[in-house]
Image (cartoon, rainbow, N blue to C red; front, side, top):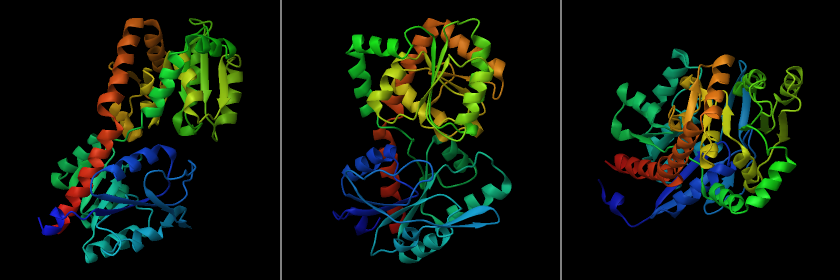
Length: 390
């Protein structure tokens, strides 16, 4: 290791991202608080989630250029190229996305200039194929280190022969601080929570909750069909569906055709945690039929059992947090009967529900924490610089 790696000078880190969603702000703020790290975020405009203001770290928004080539988006984000130089940073963290035409030029420029580079991303595609995976893996030869969202993807790269010293994991996590504050607020006010339940017709149940985008990939149609099967067993069953998205109109129509108009409550999009909390605290379980992501950690924060698909390869990296029978249940992907059976199992077995609830809380307070995520990120930054300096 050279003298530079032992120098008291701060490590200048530029992180390039497609957007700055709200859930990422605590991550970058915590990273900026770590000793000898000087953080700057360069971000564009996200397609689905709105950008928010940076708090606790430097950030700048730079528009993304996009063209459609053969029906596929080709992106150019100028910060990838601009910051691949020692005058700008010591470590450059880049979005691991081959849609960026600017990615390979930036990696080559950074290598020529002695800048350590980190590719940060999933490391896989939910629609994996040889023609998709080969270029994604090939580009890693230009990077100093790889940073994954979960251990599963990281292990796969090690098994394929990548140097373990170049591979790091920053377990994707949510800042539980506002979640736990909202949870305590409502639990400390049982009369207000009881009134909320009465006013929203959630005082009798059971109640199944979904909070996320209404997107076809999330297969909420399966939940509605499963609820239709369960309504004879649970005459007061309620579905609370919070969110918005392109699938909303078809889902509303489906709920009516299944006779669930008085049972499926479409509440619209709610982003304020204090307003979301009483819905979580009024629910018996959280169901996300397919394609689950950070929502699993949101539900776990309230101690809610999560039911989702067993087709792990089609899920997002956060599925690694789920332990079947430990903090949630998996059902056979796409099988309405299996989904209904999993929901019934949680609803009927109070002891199982309590154990799973405890496991959910433990998962987000001990393993999938903001601190652990930033620890992984920080290790990637410091070690990539050390590798570059060798």
